[in-house]
Image (tube, rainbow, N blue to C red; front, top):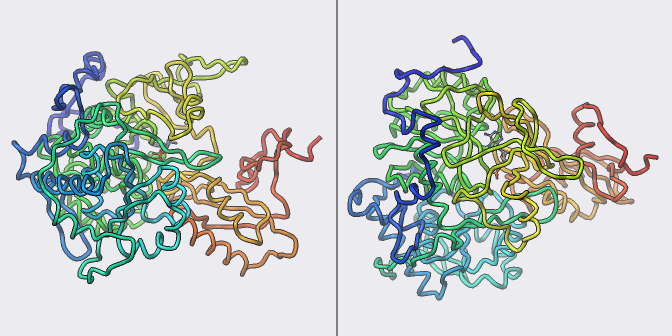
Length: 587
Ligand code: AMP
């Protein structure tokens, strides 16, 4: 297949008429007020995300399948009517425990039905939901639950014993732990925990959804910065309007779709697009409880007759690595649209989609703070492989630069590198970093939200990702804060200082690599390296821990004492060291 710089779309590319075909006209006609009218709303101007996602569909689509969970042993199908009843039970249960509006509920589990029921049930009760990634270790979990003032935790017995039990004492605000028993296991009585299944069975399946306001806090998603603790991005019930609009315009959802979002709800994509957006459109979602496996994934696409697939560059690269012969064993006649998010999607991957799946991959861009997709390639429009696409209806995106006085100005000239900024006002924009007003304020310049990403816009209005303005690491699509990793390493008695970088990796984008210097009395050795790797993995979990550790006599620091990660990275990659005038010891 000849690899051109543009993949042109023609009418023969669509089996289903796309939700929009005229870029300028749809953007001109679009308004968030009109989008809001697509949702039912609640008495008195209220809006509740879970009511819109679930209960709204019961009269017309009650018997349609909301979720099909593919478990290790058996599948479980939940219709919209059943989901309404289950989430009512969960909300009743919370109310019975005295948990109410604004209280925080965390979920730590794999992609099991209870996670989805707990998040939606919390939202119905006005309780703020925060799903955590189950591959986090005890430290990232404790940090987030403490910052988020967790009152309730839903987790599995196994995860509780492995990650929570020992540190429970450090979470005095945690009032209730609701445990999911493992399949077939005896309901063990673990002190200080409640049995979720038993309580759900005893709770009423009738519940009056709390008529939350659009500005009431609904979800909390933690994201990482360069320094300090993770930041809790606050999202509100009104975000559902963006989730609905982007489900329509970015993911092209149609009522009969079978949709598969491979992201875990521990990350924002898995919540916004693995739970809320597909339900808002009344489609059937596939949830695979297992981890990546090329054969399994192709089989799911084929057997489940997936029509719309939302996945990530790392997964696509892993499929590419598995080889074309694996793909050729399967056929995907139902698949009509494939989208990807989270990291740069290389042009080869876009083309690979066309060859292996019969469809190009459509890259899109957003971040935890934006709550929903902002820039996208969508079915009706030409793709420029390597570009993230164009801003969606309701979204104005810019490239900005700072002048000498530090003033932010919009760069009009195309193909100029600068920071990507968005005009504030879309409904899913984060409303704060929890307890960190100053950091939140710093993210804005006037009515522009500054994303922290470097990009450029071409003359056709397509945006191209260049990199980050900070040191955060993107590994397998997951944002990792170097500070969190450095802090865990520093807890080891041998470590004097630690610096952590993202080292480019063909498959996972960036791999977490640490550099440490040792305290006197300790000597670098292979066994110490293994010990440090194990130490970090135990505390941080596999998702965050470094994969490589190197020893250095000292780490480069600025004169003000900050470790120069940029320099560590340049040295690691053999790149020019750039401006080192602030390096300590430099005259
Ligand atoms: P997160 O908040 O964890 O979703 O991470 C958001 C960050 O991921 C963005 O600020 C970008 O740096 C990166 N990102 C997301 N989507 C893309 C994309 N399509 N291309 C390149 N980078 C992306």
